[in-house]
Image 1 (tube, rainbow, N blue to C red):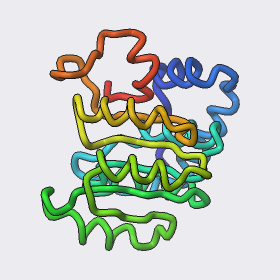
Image 2 (cartoon, rainbow, N blue to C red):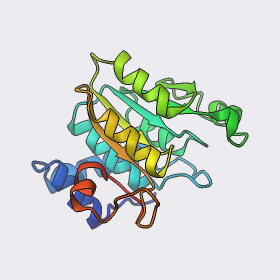
Image 3 (cartoon, rainbow, N blue to C red):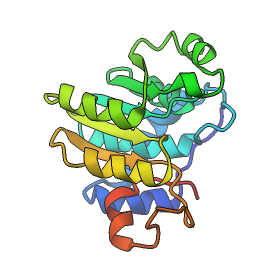
Image 4 (tube, rainbow, N blue to C red):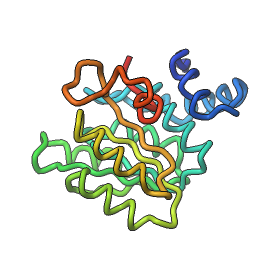
Length: 196
């Protein structure tokens, strides 16, 4: 069996955003995450499992009932999250028409995960509609598309809804045209995970 370890950056990030979380609790979460996801085959250009560990911890600690993802692609992140949290409703949004031919293979591969709902559409529009529709839910959001400035704009807008407990953007890198990456206040507020 493979092992799972989280990075110091993740621990620092989790402790900053969730100051009451203990090392023992993180170890417990890591054990559960590994048990439920170690069988999952990596999908080309997909997220790394340790990145989704951070989202998993936020969902558990913030009592999320629905997780919305924008940017399904081949479904690596939603597969990891739906596998480790079968009790949480997962909604994943992708504009499959303008993407590569991922839709049918992704949906077929993930059909056994009955807690996933697939929506075809523009995440920048659909996520705001879902935020309003799910007003009685405790919602977490993971944005893996759009990227760059549109992701930041969407995250900022979603962060105004009281039912949205966290918004996480993936792939915010130094040097992106619209990303205020070196702005410490921005990073503390919005960058819950990021590729290293």
